Image (cartoon, rainbow, N blue to C red; front, side):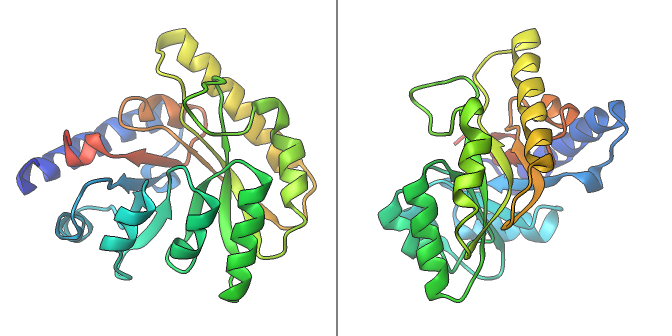
Length: 228
């Protein structure tokens, strides 16, 4: 694990790069939420980051690890693949679930949220590259999926999330352009239980590209915490 001073340097560099990318498209840092992708990081390191940087929200990938280090002093997002039988362990702890990609999962989140008298915010995960190793709804099915989950009263659709394919250059731009258009279409879609305002896309290797195409949540792990 890198030192605390290296984490601070990483953060400064990441924000500098982010601001440069945002300036190119007429946006600023206030437009984007940086979520610290905190997989494998102990609570003590998160406490240091929260106290010494602008990152106050952390994203976890694994339910068991998340529950083990959960503390209410931070804001939490769940950004990994989520099994229906694990929803009950996180429902009272997270502000936003990024990875809803099937009706059965939406139904279970709704059911567990109702138990806690809560409306759970979530994002639809989109599999832009049709990659079999990743979860997510096919881009062509996103709007229909959004309409299907709109029937649940204790969940609220807030936007889209995607983990883009590991490509670069024009290929990456093409995927991001498609995702951006899909997000715009979703915002125009008439839904009842929705407040579409978040596009969660961009990680340590591509967040500067993501924000040029409208991403307003970026999930940074290695760029902040260093190599695991």
